[in-house]
Image (tube, rainbow, N blue to C red; front, side):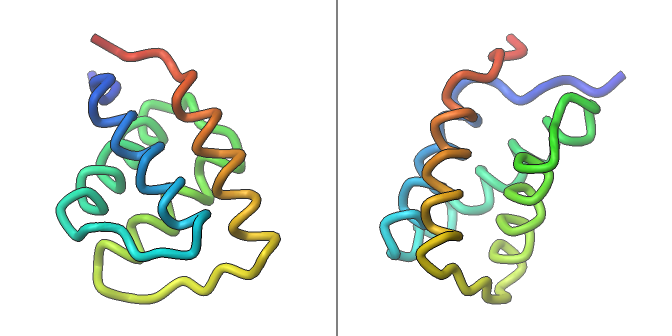
Length: 91
């Protein structure tokens, strides 16, 4: 059985999404933790389209590839960051 990521991992994911929403590049270690947290949450089957998209984008960035966010993408990242902060902790 897969477990959901702990609160700190989800907080890291929200932080990284906020960084991306601001147009900055996140710290590599934070990015990897965020990608893992959202991927784990998605694998648990509890993610909707926005969370799946965010998980895929973070995974892409964590692999060293780029994702270009326009104003709409940055706005969406900020909205998803807010939602991630409200996800259950899974602890």
